[in-house]
Length: 235
Image 1 (tube, rainbow, N blue to C red):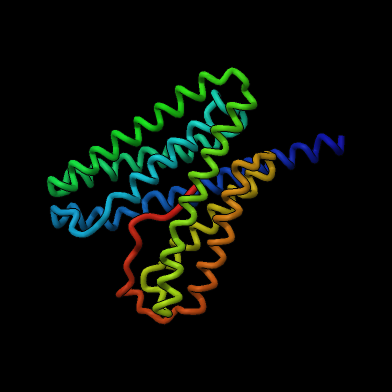
Image 2 (image 1 turned 60 degrees about the vertical axis):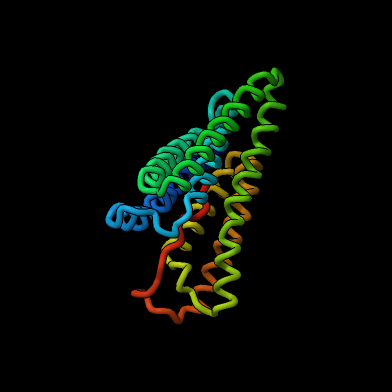
């Protein structure tokens, strides 16, 4: 009876962490909307780069594939968050291509095709691996590497904050949401005994703590002059 209650509590904690991660991730997915309102209003992508959205789409697709029933059978909430993330990133990329000048438009189209091509290769090759454990290991490693590379992207912002002693380019709520999302999926991965989830999100949690610590240390800039980064990392 006690073991059954503990198991139920364990499952509840796992699901709660996953749901919280999805909620916090949604906040990050909609964060670039301010940038795209400006792009649509001005009818131009100006000096903005579309590369972060390309990287984010590839990351979402790989993590989505890892969480699919073909690879793992116990990561539904990872599947939902990355499915939503892929839709958001594809929408942003489509808008970026529509409003970009011809050279940028052609480049972004080429990169988008490359992303889907690479994803198709990963899917086909992994399905040819008959050993389910080996298949999950290989895709899991790719997923973790993709997540870690995404979580490493704020290092540039962290370096900029330290050099300028200003948090102008590191909005507090974005950093907080990143930290909360990473921590939620860190717990989800631990409860699910899945190192391909808790290792990269553990790194994301540490970087989130660093960002928040820097924010409170260097918080000297005006909110009116703050400018959100084009994109941030997620699970």
